[in-house]
Amino acid sequence: MSRRVSWPHQRGAALALLLSLSACGGEDPSSPSEDAGPGDSGSPEDASVAVPADPYADEVVEFLPGPGAGFGQDRFPSIVLGPPVGSGLDSGSLDVLSLGKSGSITLRFTDLAVMDGPGVDLLVFENAFLIAGGPRAFTERAKVSVSDDGVQWFEFPCAPSDAANNYPGCAGVRPVTANPAAGISATDPAVAGGDGFDLATVGLSRARYVRIQDSGTSGSVGTSAGFDLDGVAVVNGVSLTAAP
Image (cartoon, rainbow, N blue to C red; front, side):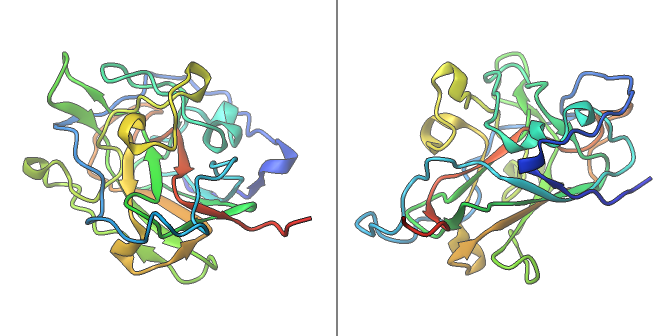
């Protein structure tokens, strides 16, 4: 059963549900892909584009869980608004919210915007993990869309059934190593893991909203079905707050 939920981060509210929790993880094996989106854009010399001090989403605008959702809802919404808690290449994090089959979540940045800069602009973190040391991985894929006004949306091309090419353009493919609490940056694509997205791919220069929708191609059961969101992080961003 689907429901619409709006949770401002500032209230720090949590949706407490008594659920039987099961371990989250992927089902379909793949090799970790490269960052989604073609090539670089922008210029390193552009001073208006920088890594923001607070690179994580601030609000959950909408959560529409699909069948089999439930895991992580006892810590919702904070579980998806902070930094990722990556567990490394061989272990999927349990600091996640399961979207359920075809479920979706829409997040908003209030103090910054994602900007089209050099290379990857946005990272999305799930809990994919390598099978016995790799190179193949368990994955649960999702489609990612971005918007600057929350009305007009731009969806990144995603091939959630193309295992031979490592599900190009999808989120939920690469294991997550980012864990700021352990000193591993969540804004450096070279070390963070997760799946990267370049706004140039969809022809957008700025985005304040991110929508993630499970592709419906995974077969998990229990309360951990579908894409498991750990968090999102801005790589190239600009402040939305006025200077004092």
